[in-house]
Amino acid sequence: MSARRLLITGAAGFTGRHAAAFFAAEGAEVTAVLRGPVQQDGTVPPFPPGVRVMYCDLRDREAALRLMSDAAPDEVLHLAGRNSVPESWERPTQVLEANVMATANVLEALCRRPSVPVLVAGSLLKFRPELGEQPSHPYSLSKTLEEWVALAWSRLFRQRVLVVEPCNLIGPGPSTGFCSLLAGKIAACERGAAPSPFRLSSAQDRRDFLDVRDAVRAYGLILRQGEPGRVYRVDTGRFLTLGEVASRLLAMTSAQVPVDWGASSAPGSLLVREDACDAHASELGWSPEINLDRSLRDILEYCRSSGKGESQ
Image 1 (tube, rainbow, N blue to C red):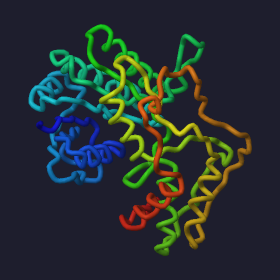
Image 2: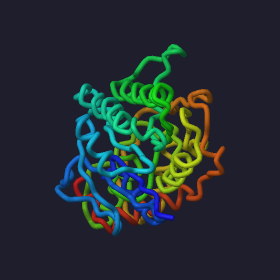
Image 3: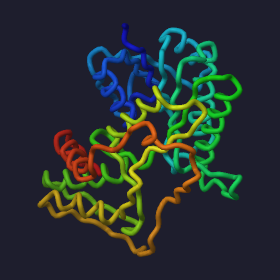
Image 4: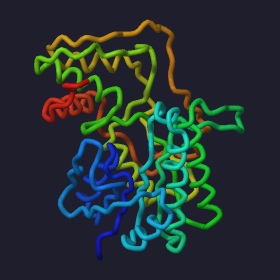
């Protein structure tokens, strides 16, 4: 039996790189789709041997059609998009194009291959107008519309479209997330640098952190075994304060790391409604395998070995 052909959009991103490595190791013929040949730092992301790299601006409908025709995937993991809330305020239409129209282009390009399952990465930052919720920023609007498009496409065109809503993903590799930024500060201090203090607006904010490698495993199960037209949550169900997570990271070094713990003492958390999605990855036999301390150690080791953190 020939290996399945898996196409990953957004393969240059944090989750995309882990997904390409994981599925290639599983034996899939992975096609990593990048927007362009050179990334923001001027380099091409390293991929495992055998991973095919293709370039496509998914906002371009004709380019997306050509991509799917040339790659002829058996499965699609759609991770591409913009995920910066500040950027969504500065360039709202560009974020809408990247998150909504690019997704529509990917799905349209697969209309002639309705049996190909497509997993679309959604967001817990979506809003639900039927519950009286309003978007808190343009990014929330874009991810809500993206999910609507994905689910509607599944019904209208009888395509095998599924949506995942992950919690905060962490792990080794290039990331602008809270844990990676603090680990970068620690690594810089260990090398003798004197970076500005790491600012934590509120140590009481609560988040659910999941290792990206566990998330990628869940994506594989959902892609192959999930029910089209459903939204699957991927999380641990365990919330920790940012202060607790920061303290765990700081305990892994002997360096003196300046931290501004912020003035806010009011607890806060991302509101996660039980009815926000109708399924969970655990229904397919998935459960997290990597605990938080291992994730934090791996992040810190990545920052130490890669030289991350000097300019932070």
